[in-house]
Length: 69
Image (cartoon, rainbow, N blue to C red; front, side):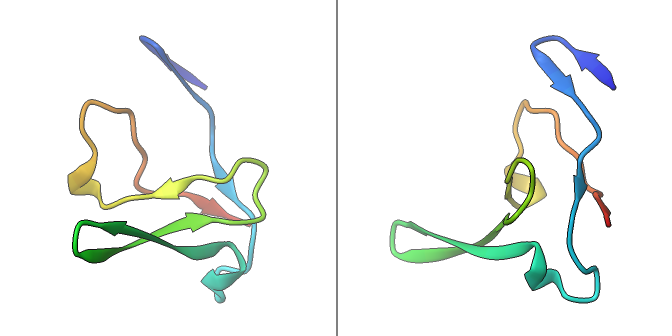
């Protein structure tokens, strides 16, 4: 576990079948102006999270890789 100012980071692991991403990911269709964003969010996890494109991350702690079990 790492601690950053105002952030507490713990290891995040997703539960599901890696060969079937639909077991732990679902579309997060959010409308932005005139189009639908193609983001995803987790489902069935201890704490569900929203996945966004890396280029949209600003001034936040983030991770790119997750363990899946």
